[in-house]
Image (cartoon, rainbow, N blue to C red):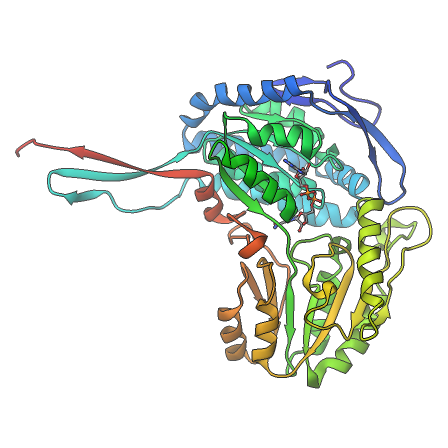
Length: 486
Ligand code: NAD
């Protein structure tokens, strides 16, 4: 383990049960809240990625034949270990993402533990079709079996929670894994390495660090990898699909989002303001379900813009006292500049009005001011494209059918919400929104029991819930002929 840790951080990869230093290029890891270099991580070399995949392949036979009870107990052990180390893991998450520590602890870590516990339970009570004689003299039954080696590739916005979403159902279903965190945010995942190594047979899970084009592409193109699970950008999803086509791999893609928020005249305006202030800007808007595309009905529009403007301007960030902060910075200067250029292009159009924000925050770190833009039109780039930053737009509508048409006029299909005090109306709209999730008088809430995933270019495949277990397994039919006469 020489060279696998420094004073503050664990830096070892996990390959075939061994905690080893990466042998690839060395990349600095930053704290986006200050711009400071936290440490440097040596990525996996080509040979190490190869060893990780082959180790996962060797481990598959034995792991896939363990009982659900056995795997559930392993997952429960991992959950307990994460819970025990939650304060430390939250600190790493806060440092590496720049998130306020109290939010990383209370939200990300709590959810991470719950996801492992949920899948430990879910794998022991799966349901399916009835066995029976569907052809005379033949008994049919259905099995649900694991797929093989899964390559899991994660983004930087919720590093440890995304790891849980990918690792827990894949292991529960009996697969083995090679997991790659984002090259920006490996620290909390590398801190899990000893916990995982202690609890899982060698090769069942392998953790390799590295960039998308190097380590990521190697994983995606390897013939022994049977499923690629990505949470990331649409363009990355497209590249992965092209690479996976060569070996006909299964893919599970959770891509971007641009959530419409339909606010009707009869909505509880205080609830909308509080909801959008929180869930339009949570994690500095680096969230694929962020409440970022408001359609406000004509009667409520002006009041909503005014009240939301004041509420957004009161969001606390970049304070030296971390406990005061409600949102963090963008992950990198590149991401911050990308957000800034979206807003610049939007404001170069005369019909778009800056209500608040719209500037890079002066001072250290990669902060961008929470921004609210009004007067936006359906065809505007800022309404159509995912910004992935603390930027919310407001578009006025007349009549619900116009709002519904505009909400569905999007390449994305992940999350949406409708705000009204008329539940009948809400249910009608919810039924016609083409999104993986629709919240009524709420936004952003996820729970381990319910599926999360998109339509259209937001991808396919579900995270969380027993639907995710299905995505990480295959249905097989076993048929036995019987000529025994009773
Ligand atoms: P990204 O696509 O740049 O990177 C995601 C991961 O893919 C990283 O680990 C990266 O190294 C890897 N990668 C990049 N190119 C690759 C390639 N050619 N082959 C293999 N792997 C490759 O995304 P990001 O910037 O880390 O995250 C932001 C994006 O993720 C946003 O678009 C956001 O909407 C999306 N996201 C979606 C969900 C969801 O549940 N739908 C959740 C979080 C984030």
